[in-house]
Image 1 (cartoon, rainbow, N blue to C red):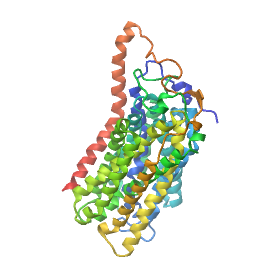
Image 2: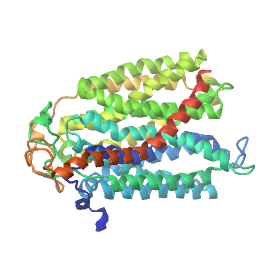
Image 3: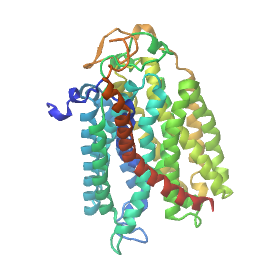
Image 4: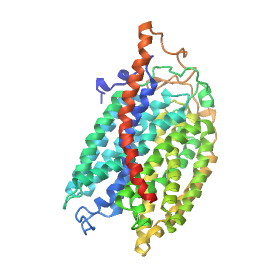
Length: 513
């Protein structure tokens, strides 16, 4: 199907004087919206009480049934990223982000219809199917674009792109709780109206990102950039069809799968877990604060850990994730038994920061091993590990919880075995990470183009002489225009982020009382 003219890749190629620092707000605009999936746990209890506002009725959905919304959405995220990875590279980020906005926000609207009709398969189709496709397309496109704009700092670039996904729950969970409070009546939990309001707001913000994004001109490279890895130094690259046949790809697949499985089940169950482990002490509002503060840790971890990986190296950084994470997971049951709320929250914050850091570090890890050629498509296929983890992680947590509750256990005893299983998974991931080696040269090939665009590497394409010279009046006004554009674009994404941070901190204070 032909791409409309206003969405074509050729319309998004940046001028030589374009300011690359306008790109992170575009990426954040999309990821702050689709990251709402991490705040879905605040809908779990309301969706189990649609026919009984105080207690579940026989016709209401169970928590495991609701959990499948989350699992299907993340499963579809990985599948869509893998299936459409090449299409994303070909049509460019604007068309992809525009399509992601329509799919994700349309999925929220279909979900609202399913809730209104109390039709569970329609909820699955809306949030898990259509919304999941929007998640996958919206996730990979900003990542591959920023990697090309920041060849000098790939870890920081992926952190900037992906940190919004971690922060999405911080905004979405707090906004959703507030909206449900406004729309709740004696016979309605307010879920339908909340989903529709979120769909409209997210659509506006995601379209801002789609029409702000640009792709670098052919041969773009930051002046002063010094290559430090074999993939950066050599004018070679590994295409997606070769990459996924290498042992390095599958080792990184296992690394991501273990890291995600260990964290995703906890995030999906965060709100009910806080209320059950600290029964009578943590309210629904404070539990939303717990979800929000984990989202803040997820956001900051994606930027800080991935930026640190530019200096520490990807393998060392992942080893820290797995070793420290396993130790911290094993301490959580004891903190829950002792009812140490504050310590429990702090340990969970560190764990989830490394969970988020793993997501942001993996694209740079791929770039180091395979080069920038088709890195978006390779990343898309690797995200099938997320799909598997999205099914396994929440299913383990919910299945173990149901069995423990059926056995008459309460509080932290419902989750202790699950937390030990997650710690063991991290140790498996550590072994896989330590086995990663550089890609054998037999998989390299010297192609000059990657699906319609030149490889954006130093020494490939035109020499990097910096921006074209400006006339004197233009040179004097350019810094002023750049500053104004930066302030405008960053303000649009930082305002909702500031709201999420404020609400998160305010509610989270109750957890330390």
